[in-house]
Length: 86
Image (cartoon, rainbow, N blue to C red):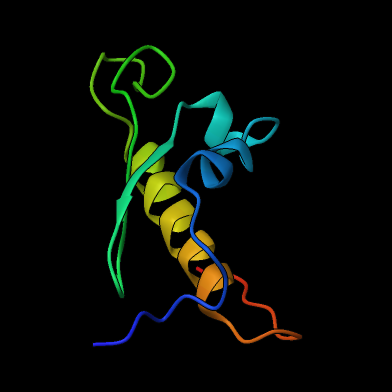
């Protein structure tokens, strides 16, 4: 299978994209990728807990949306854009 990425993948650079936005605030870090997938991780700590000390569902959604948005950005042809709707 040929890689779907339309530009070189640099995991540190992808992580740095979120530095001054929600992904950086909750500690999302891109860790691995293959021809048609990306992986990131997020700490389960005070930043991502709900008031009862458990992982907040919204934090899980933020992780999923971040990975999907970045992967879409990396796979879309030049001159096109991707956006998350829900």
